[in-house]
Image 1 (spheres, rainbow, N blue to C red):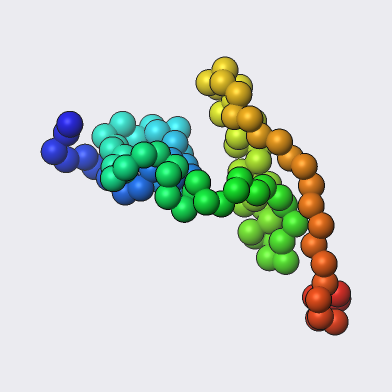
Image 2 (image 1 turned 120 degrees about the horizontal axis):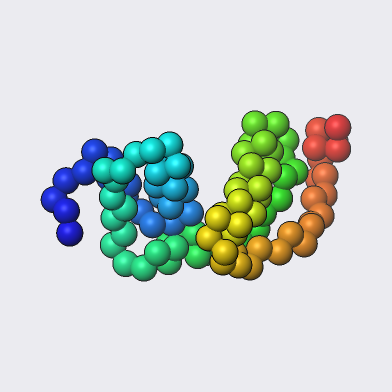
Length: 100
């Protein structure tokens, strides 16, 4: 294992893997990912894989939409099935403000 790198990403969950993926797509080569146990075994594993684009914040909604498209891109690049299933969902307004 290397002793140093220009960028060291700590944590092999969805965020750490995404940061490393985007750095390498941008041409960075001196990068390293450190994970203390098993990839995606922490909070990413507990997230249940929910993916949607409905969000009150338009910037977060755009990020969520980008993520869904990114999984499709990674499947094409790698030739591997990410087993992504967009099933939909229901969000209920529990206050008059949320209804608006």
